[in-house]
Amino acid sequence: MPEEFGPWATAWDLFNKWNANGTLDKILDRLRGACMELDEIDDELWCVDGTIVRAARCASGGGKKGTRKNRLITH
Image (tube, rainbow, N blue to C red; front, side, top):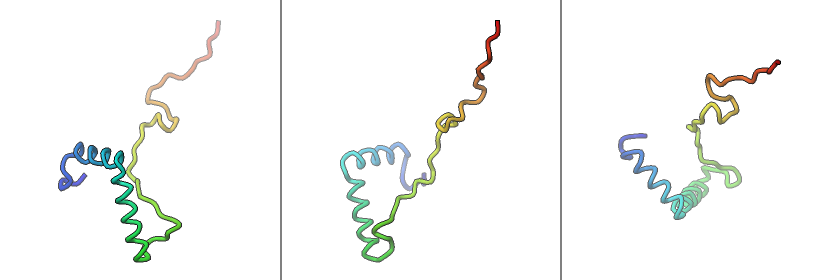
């Protein structure tokens, strides 16, 4: 996160608060409206890029490193 935005915890707290109280929705509506007036986006197709999303290996079903595999039990 760029230094000019301050500590990451402050940015997260603002994001969380704005998401809960509807401020982020208002910001998105205004940005969409401004871009649509300038014909910069298609009013039928648009998205917000969230490219940097990390997940743990086990979130994709890959399991953790060093997990034991099931063994057949023989008597």
